Length: 427
Ligand code: C2E
Ligand code: MG
Ligand code: MG
Figure (tube, rainbow, N blue to C red):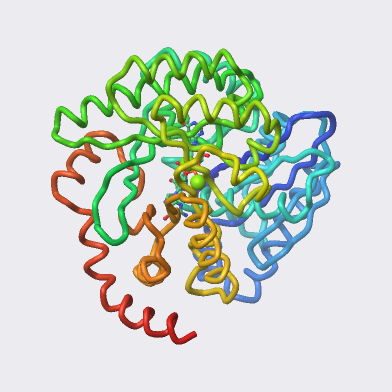
């Protein structure tokens, strides 16, 4: 029989690198259904033990455990995150030779994924990271895998690449509209950065913003973002859309006076409207200078929004001192809105709090009609989320605006709206 060998690799990154690391690797027989059909259930169920034996022979330092009829996990200690590559390569090599199953040679095609964390890393988080990575490894399988196979766990290398990318055309801003819940109008959009990496493919900000922050690249990257948002706002106006574009500003920049001065100069010299999104946690780090600098932004007409509200550290004392005009409720609460008992209460009281502080409320992570309906009933001012649009490239965003596509979701929502409005008001 001739089941071919191959491997789909996906490495999920964790905020790592310091002294000693631990690796958690998952290995699955991708062609298990095929082998089971050929071998029969009873023999196929023992296959995973044969695979584990192979791995124990090849990787003496690893703790190898079978955790399902088709899944093996490896736990290994190491000195540096990049060792994960070598570990996974060694695991793949263990299956290059076919397995001997009752005198017959069978090749096992594997899907492999791994996560790396510091020695202190939480075991559950590490396991979850590896599981997420495995899901992606399955999804992308071979052809896609090649492009993303070395997703950043080597922060130093990634930082060097990012340093070069900022000056090139590799970074791009995608836009996600914020829709006024009652008026169904788009008056602003959030700029979300993406990295079109020449070999890794599209890299999302969660994978490189922390690296940029650690490697002192965030200042240059954010100035690039502001410059690009100013250009894009001008291009949108040329298309007939006068929108305020919001840029995310990392916490560490809020106490960087020279960044603040430069950003203010850029915005003041432009003739477009911008907004800055900052998290409350970043303000709490150095409240005095953060509040003063946010005031400088507000003074020149930059609209300040508090991002991810509820997800990090919150302080009512600071909240009321911030010159913020918008409060964005973290998607954590919004995605669970209609399936949890507590979250609607939290969201409702956050909306009331924001209104009492004279802020508009934006709910991020609106994915369902039911959530949109409930948020509208609760008096949420604006909504943002996949239900209306994913973040999309500039040209697609212009088409979205031209076709008034944001009105489609609220129309379908009307039925949910009436039902939920009745329930919520009763309860
Ligand atoms: P954020 O500012 O809270 O941005 C919202 C994130 O939620 C985006 O992820 C967006 O794609 C995602 N999202 C939007 N709607 C939905 C939804 O309905 N459901 C779900 N599950 N997710 C939704 P993205 O683009 O991966 O950005 C992640 C984070 O990276 C941002 O969180 C922001 O903190 C940071 N980021 C993005 N662009 C920049 C940037 O230019 N500069 C800085 N410093 N940080 C950035
Ligand atoms: Mg944001
Ligand atoms: Mg957010």
